[in-house]
Length: 244
Image 1: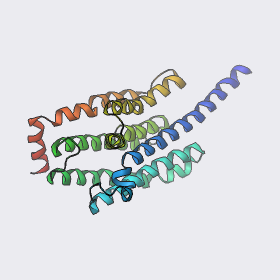
Image 2: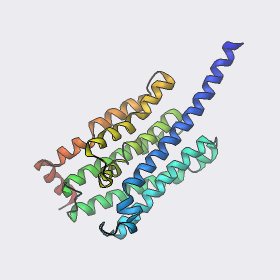
Image 3: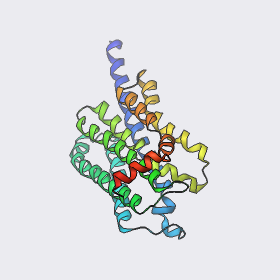
Image 4: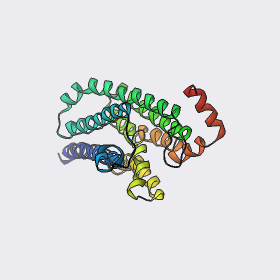
């Protein structure tokens, strides 16, 4: 009798751990983004020295923030065992995520055409970094939506969409808060590898989504994009892509 009961208990515990883990990761990503953009967006009124924002940036920021709150809400619904409501809100997330991608592209193209860079990096380099972020988010987001009936794949794909595709710009802005540049890479990697490590601890194996996701994340790691973005070849490509 004990051999029949133990696996069931173990499975219930694992499901409970999964719910807490993914909700924790969603909240951590939201907090990181809020802190990263606090001086230049969320708490800008308290830091008047930061540049003025256009209407387009305000719209993009609103939609992006709404998506992050939606992402936290969806994980919270699973954590409190409300999967039916989670599924009902799924179509809203499809439209919201698509809006994030479209507005992100508009902002990226507008910034490079106006020669708006970021810190020590020129507009063309920032353009590359932003395009890869948007492509990464779109890749995992769309695939996650297509695999929405596969819980194991879906939750991992949606988390990869956020921790690989969206937190990069916020990480880059942590330097404004005095975070040393050499710490930013390890923070990025910590978010990227949190899922695989969790799988190893709870399942003794890593889901294929994490394997492919981490490999993709490492191949497009932000420092590599900065190096490529500084080359004359990419500057030429950026001008062609942006129609400059």
